[in-house]
Image (cartoon, rainbow, N blue to C red):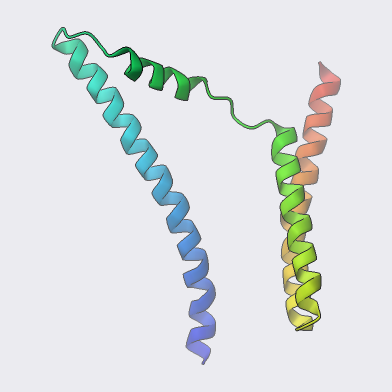
Length: 124
């Protein structure tokens, strides 16, 4: 019983980490293959397909999320976890405390992103 209580969170968070790291790894491999294809075509004197160049340009031109977007997403995640914690609190009081406490983390980070966005807009 003690071993499963120890392993459950490790497996859960390990699975999440594996998903994130795996997706980043495969995106990097795909990007490297595209650049190798372009490099090989240039070295051999062949024309580079325009759709390949458009794909690279589209990825490099993609805009990262703004602090406002990140803040709103994290606020939503924190509020959602908080509501989930309150609902679970009807079943188990310890779950309410744990989940609501966990909800405070993305909520506070979201507030920080919103403050960062507000300060950035006032400077310009």
